[in-house]
Length: 202
Image (cartoon, rainbow, N blue to C red; front, top):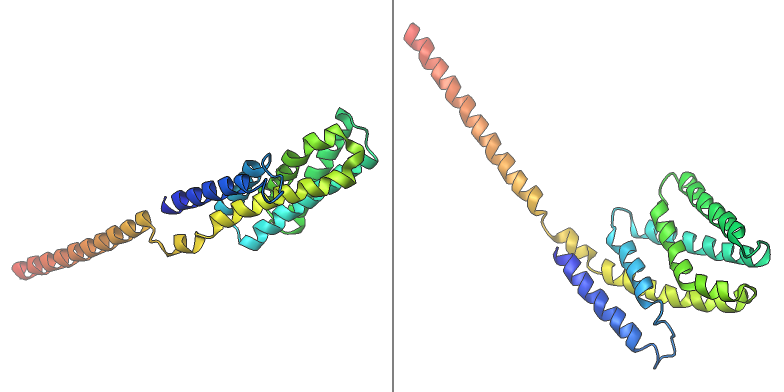
């Protein structure tokens, strides 16, 4: 709980500063700041996989989707059929990557990478597909900056989370210890009563 609150506060501050400083620094990231920071935060908050595997999955999803945009601009018609073929091939490649990596690369990390680029570039691409080489690098750079900020904000506190005792598990451990002691006491008491009964019979 504490890590989530601190990470969320840090993320809010960083995202606000990114938007405020966009104009003075000529970054032009206002339209993708929250999208990128939010996706980066999700990538950082779900910590069931090593950091390198999460980053690698995100990068693969991002790059494959970028290549798919290039293929759409060069070879596929700008129609529902062309978009369907591109989407099918992209997701199929993601599944193939999961299989080839023996599930070390997770599908959800690749989907986050794909969504990051799609959210930042799809509208721009639809307006002018032939300008893919001119416009896509700028859109990719903008959203990657926001993703990096969100990811860093939520992973900085991970070591602190590991140091915090797990309340439920700790209490359970204590309870388990008391139960064991109680069971030992019961066994000892039963043994004494049995011994007394045997002596009485003799």
